[in-house]
Image (cartoon, rainbow, N blue to C red; front, side):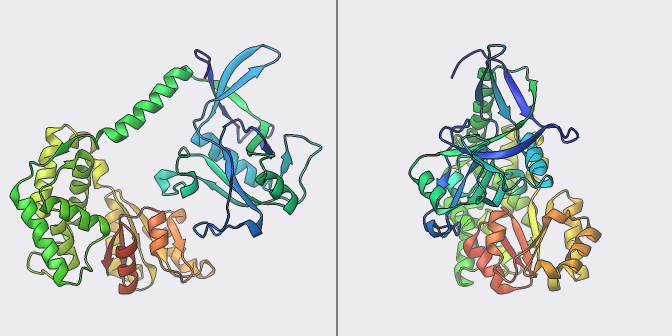
Length: 407
């Protein structure tokens, strides 16, 4: 990478019809240096070679791309931000450019038999995580899938083209950071993310370990139905007096703070009580709070700890006054509330009406069409799901890290 070059943020102006991304192109050397993937019988994504589907990154977010201007002889880098990519996707959709594709950025090589069948922007804040094949892609990157002819698929598979590259008319805005500054800033952010995992403590009181042991015992008596995989792991760690990281302590405080309302010391068969004990119980909450304050972590982040991603079933859950009151309490606390229903979207009018009534964003309403809900819950990184269907609760506890609560 060339040092000491200016860096520009590249974007389009949604109010300026002259700025747009008009075409996607398959090229040998994509600017972002991320090749597309050919899926062969990958059941996770339901793609296979027979379908002639090519999937890859159309734009990689926050990835410096080297540029040289022949006229001014200027060297510089351009970067697509997450917001800029979001604007591009919106503009691409409103102009109906989905099937605009050529080869090697040539106007003489327009493909008439290439069709975009998937368009997906990674947005971790909203729960739209990267697929496994693109798990290292930056947040905000745009992933697309095209169904192409046998000839194009075969040539791509043979390596004639290795990635996607968009083309259009953009506006550039110089940032006040050099490429080195931006790289170090990104590195610092990533280091901060792992910093909490590099400090370990095991000075929690015996009461925490004893609560975890009690939770394990009660859970076994209850057929091991009251804990997620993470809950069981946390209980084992605390019961054995093993080290826990700052990140784990934050999770303990977050979970125990919001789950306290479901703890009833007089009801040792309730999953709310058992799960609370597995995480260390009240003693665990008090120790986690004290430790975070000691480390200077709590005051700056306590609001963040309290926020959860919580989802509600609709029929016989949100349709009741009790369910609506529960949802309203989470919304009032600033939590991110979702509706996940087994209904078909074609039968979703009353669901959207309920969302509007409660103040739940329309985009937070999901329809599984009769399918099990745990997959949607896992994809959205839901922390807690409230449902009247015990079978769904059991599947959620078995297959996700979410807390399944029987309504």
